[in-house]
Image 1 (cartoon, rainbow, N blue to C red):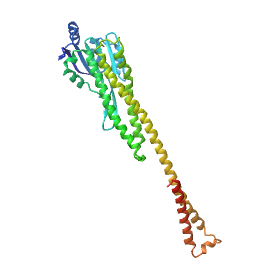
Image 2 (image 1 turned 60 degrees about the vertical axis):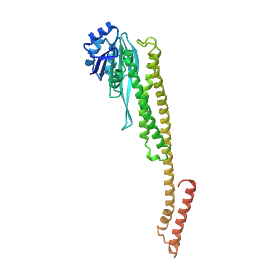
Image 3 (image 1 turned 180 degrees about the vertical axis):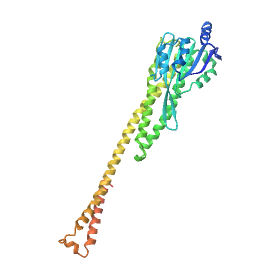
Image 4 (image 1 turned 45 degrees about the horizontal axis):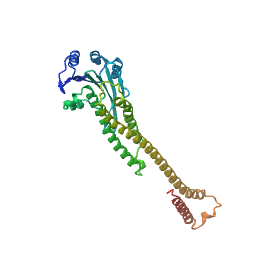
Length: 325
């Protein structure tokens, strides 16, 4: 559905009437643009905007279906940009994924948001408080939306770094049983989700900053997009390092579990060996054969107990020196 639409002329927001008439008037004056914002639109809801603005059907299909890889497509009458949006859920430390698609054309810009991540109302409000930026036209909206999305990546980068530090401290604290391999793997999965959103965006941003065929990208705009690209590359470097570090942490944790299990098995084996000696002696003398002279000795009971205790103590000292106990 259309969540907001307005005409911007001279840096000011004006009411938007009929799309065709407004667009014709803007082109006749040679200044201003229409900004239409949609949220999870259906094909039928998008039809009016598509017809009035003459958007390319392939781009419209991508915007309606969603689940697109970050990209930049140049069509005859518009520029189509796709980005993944992210939202960090503090309660569960999960990263939720959405999408934002932007059509930039002659005196118009259409933003399509899918999912709950990265609302664009704040971006619109911020731009409306900066008329000097709005005067740059639709390219200013493209820059502001992309800058907002990458700023969200930076914020999530910090959250993931804190989660990673916490898990790293737990794994190397020595309390192996207090750490869950599932927790480490869960964070690794979130980092991979983070990478799927950030890494593919590197190439589209590079095109926006370097490709001379991109319409509307005047020389004055390119440095701003290069700034976004620098922030994105920093986030990508961090995400790559988080992924590698989590792999090492997971391997270290599984190794610790294996070592702990070996220690437990050695300890159990030592106790079993210590228990086996008195059990064997008791079993022998429990058979009560007639030709066992020791059974009739006056102090045989105490001697057998002493032998058992000495044997157990001797085994205990041996296992203790070997590090099994």
